[in-house]
Length: 167
Image 1 (cartoon, rainbow, N blue to C red):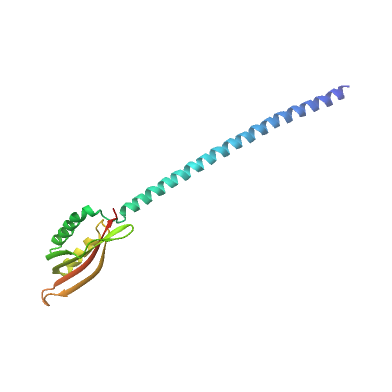
Image 2: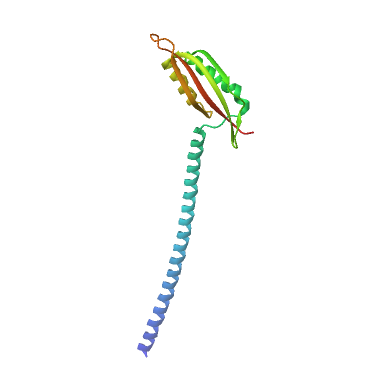
């Protein structure tokens, strides 16, 4: 009889151990589920941070891109070109608006013709300044003629398009 009790005692001990182990197993699974959920949350937060950082980089890149001006800024743009010509020591700077703006779907195009004189380096500096403007412009054509052979003076004619937002 002692063996029977001992046998049933062993059985109760095993059942208790299994219950504890089952309970530990359930806690272990709940812990894994909790950690998996936390990891998913951290991955989502990291993805949001990565997207936010990429958006900032794209905004900065967009700010560097030249944009069409507003038509109201036309006189300001002409002043800016005149200032560049003065800074480049150009002489006889004249601009002529070729025609009325050409309307497109997204922008208007204003053709200008610029004529001026100076040495080649100064003309190059002026052209570089116009290319570095924050405004959207395009040089359609350029003609350079030597004014005198010994002094290096050049006469230039530049056909330039200025782009404006369609309003």
